[in-house]
Image (cartoon, rainbow, N blue to C red; front, side, top):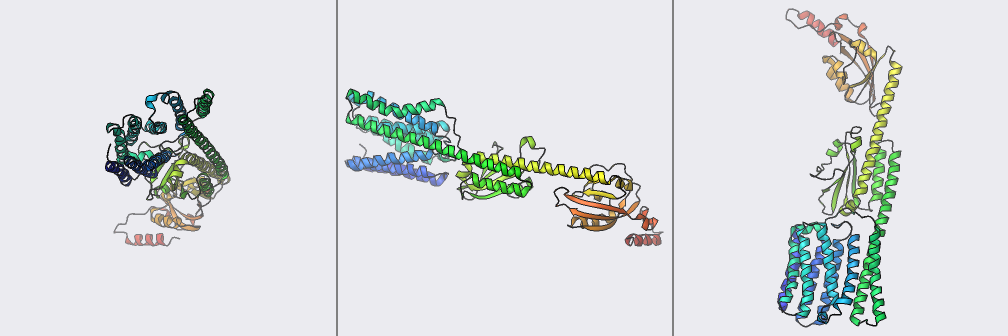
Length: 547
């Protein structure tokens, strides 16, 4: 047998290796790995006590080892970790436990050569291998999971061979368990075993119900058969009790998970239904923002959200200094890291592909909060972002239709009037101009995207730009440049309606005052030659004081 010092070195060394892996690699959830390190120490205590013939202390160490391993596996398989849906795993474990019970009662316990093998150790090892095997199946390239599985097989081999042949080679399985689990904690892939993922519950099928029912019914059925034949031994009775308790615990866990998932689905459904109602009733951007914030508080747990930003365009989104979507990431959303390791920033773009033309400005719903809460509610938040995008698109289209109707009404009213009127956007491009303006400058049609600055005489252009850039109403005297290079002196009266959601621009009225001034003002500017200084001076004075 290995000496007690060797067991101490193996157990403590493996536990230190796991703790070093936690410190170096910083997994998202360190608790499962801390429990693994504690289970290794507990197993080492049991082995040392067994080597020193302290049977009672050894049993306590072994039981504590299995308890810590069970809790750590529950942490590895909890909803939201790498194993997104553990319902299939629970069904498999319950069925495996029932199958092992039948094999033990009618196979192993009936053979005298296996009488020294502990049924509890074998059943526990097989369940451990089943859980780790499910983790391996979830991520087939995870070296840490394979190391854990290797250690589980080593423990099973040692629990079977050591009671039959208690010598040094039989203890190699325990050594393999220590080394493999310590190496699993040191490998960088150990972080992926605790990475949060969105829950993906599978559909409830009839075969799952039948499998769970068969697993629950097996222990009482075996007990009934043994009682009728009168061959219920003490050891078999204990095995029946333990197997029945494990199967019942797994069944209750399975039902609790199903009830929890159902309640979460109902809560998300109610939250999204209320959010949809609020977004349909929203008439402007502040109402959409308020509806989205209220929906986030309903969809996520209290105190789980630190910040919510509804960036309605890519310009505001750029101001948040958010990282771009990683290569190959789902375009519907992606997670970004923050300074706090327990927090993440979820970015859900507001752009919907069918409506990209109607709303090309983009934008995103940005939520910073608890990593686990954002991961669990990611699907619902993506739906909320899509509903917000639809609401914003609807508001944009309604406003566009309103502006078009307003422009049509304006055209119908002033088409045949002598007044010169125009609607100028915030970038001073002419959205609408009455026919009299085209007649004044001598054009049949204004070119597309014509700006008011293009019609102003260069001498007055900068002053007009400066005055119209300011907020508020005003009046400006300036000159328009006609096609024949003559000038038309005008008086511009404008009203600032850029904040009006139906207009979103300046309503400009132009009055031709050319007839009130010297006709020389309508001539092109002559070249300034040296033989005409008097005329140039008079022309400059007239241009300066023409208003």
